[in-house]
Length: 366
Image (cartoon, rainbow, N blue to C red):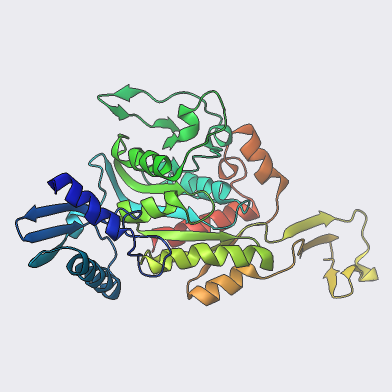
């Protein structure tokens, strides 16, 4: 049997070995970096990023058993690439901290949360922002930028706005045509955003992930040493059921969870009753369970739970991580995305801006 054919047969057999805790095999994870054969000796080089000793040992044992059961080698050696080989695999990717914003649930506001946190961080730090939603990139609209990045010496140069270096597939797909790619193509494109982008020296790289636990997420956690992940949810229990799947994926591959953000948490209503007479000692009755007091000047301020549920608290308690912040429903927040200017740069004294400041501080201190 020719050497190349033998390697192909070995790799084919490895497709039956699943990564611990997943229904995906070690080949689809990109764990097998190389196979070196010297007579009756075989050396298998693994690109394993996880620190989970049990997972590593399980993978090694499964590989050795598979090789010995199906091939005639006297010595089977497993070599693990060192941490220094795995950190920031692209030499042009040099952030001090890489933070992923994620949720298995779509429509919870990952892009809005991550962009506003990035803008807060950029007030003091050098920040890069990578939009990895290849199927539906929203970044060009959210920052009002539809230029194409320059290509210099085979490297894409990020576009800069608001003091942040941005990269998105949306910058490359100018025709706004639908993207129809299979898994391997998605994985290659994801990798190119790390290896072929001139990020330079960054304090933070913020990554906006698409919903789910598919090829983009798996490529990311295998390729890049993430500092941590921020989980986004909304209050409803229906959202929580999906969000938990994404949280558990990061736990299984030993990516630290920084905390949870609950978006669309409440609606704040405040106002003034003109010509108010404090002697009346009136209260506003919102429902049978909520009365709102009016101060002596006629001012009132209260929150309404539009979406019932405590998903943020439940998930943070389940994971044993902090609830980083609760973002109120705010028309200006939605409008900011539509007009291409981040919310925290427009409404820096609002309740939500204070929450984004608190969230950003927690990430800095993580």
